[in-house]
Image (cartoon, rainbow, N blue to C red; front, top):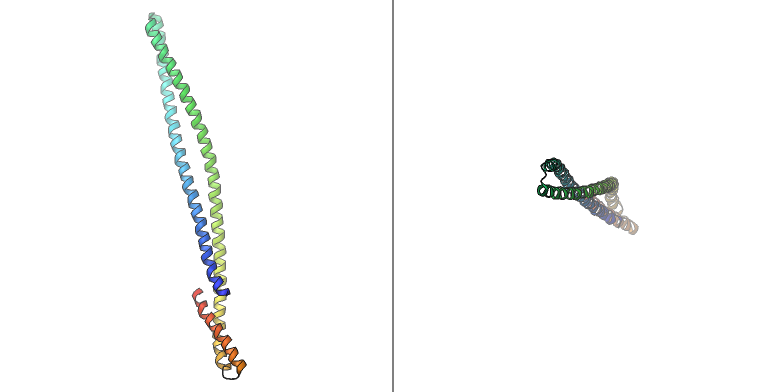
Amino acid sequence: MRTAGLGKMPEQWRVEIQEEKDKADKWEQRFQEIQRRNEALERSLSESQKENGELKDRVIVLERSLHQYRSQNSTIKLKASLSKIEEMEKRIEELETELQNGEIQIKYLKANESHSNEQLHHFQNQVRSRDHLIKKAVVQIREVADHIQTLAVQADTLSVKYELESDRGQELALLLRKIRVLGTRAKLYL
């Protein structure tokens, strides 16, 4: 019965290790997804900063134009320029808000990335630890199987010797045959 139980243990460990590896793979996928989102947000942030710079340059140009219009006493053009400047300032404020929101999202994603990395390392350590235990168990199983093989050879020799002597000898020979059967099963683990 113990031999049958030993045969099932490596299979259960393999299943558990596979489950842990699957979990680690899922965390790895989630980590990569977060990185992709982070990169997209950084690109968006960079584009927003560039657009913000361009808008500020345009505001400077428009302010210069405003000074020219004031000197020319063109009130209609001045009102149109002021309206454009106000729109630009409003757009700048919107972009600055988007920029701040993007920076907050980047901080959040970086914090999640760090947490995901910690969990990934934890799962990888668990898998390594279980691999190590399984290797130890397999070595022990092989040692037991080897020992049973030796006992089976000795049992074979003894069963021939005692089989003919008495009823007790025949019982002993039967017991030794059972050991031989266990020895045959143990070969599977060698």
